[in-house]
Image 1 (tube, rainbow, N blue to C red):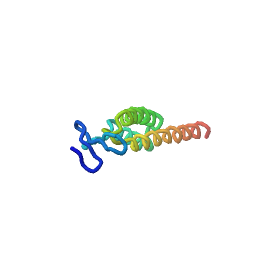
Image 2: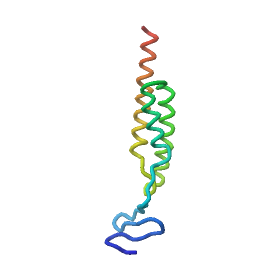
Image 3: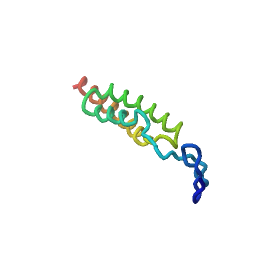
Image 4: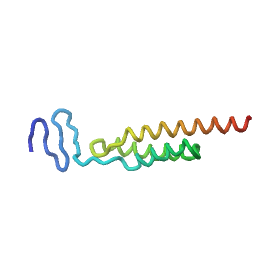
Length: 102
């Protein structure tokens, strides 16, 4: 199927300009949303632990999304989860140090 710069390629659509396959049924990368949930929950409780879990899950989701860029979305959510997980760890570490010192 040829249509204004697009070509049907198997189950995906390939653009003539960039030679990138775009899948019509893109899904969110597995674990991206879960990592974001863990990162947000880490602000309220167990930030040191949940921040590490969020970073690990976000890393896996980012790997899946970058290995299959035309098939999976969610790189932005995974990056946000990594950032928030790091912030969780830093803030809870500072809170623990202040609690011990005072």
